[in-house]
Length: 139
Image 1: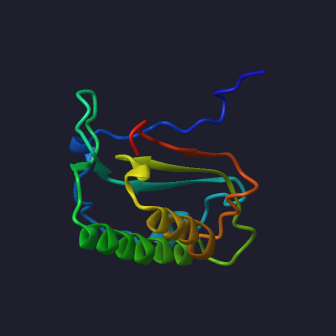
Image 2: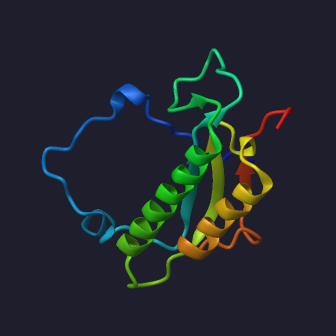
Image 3: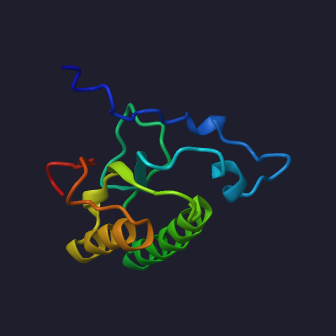
């Protein structure tokens, strides 16, 4: 048994991001890809402290309106990605992860909304797939 066989941990360093010269549509990028065992990752960039090892897109703290606006944007992006996956063949998530940042920095209501985005917008069944959530002891 290899317990880490399907664990997804492949964050590109933030300096690896760059504009694409020819912006392909998400739908064309996903057109030929299998969609029956996808991994879902939702990023929450808010933290209470900055960890010395972290090179991800994060920020310390967040006023309430910022978390609301961020979840609004995440919901729009989730809808665009789900639409890009198309209707041809089954779309199934085999695993889900909420990372960051510290997703548990969110309030209980905001965490519930995050789960709703994963389930209702993306179509993930969080009760039937492995779910990992990055946390902090104080959140």
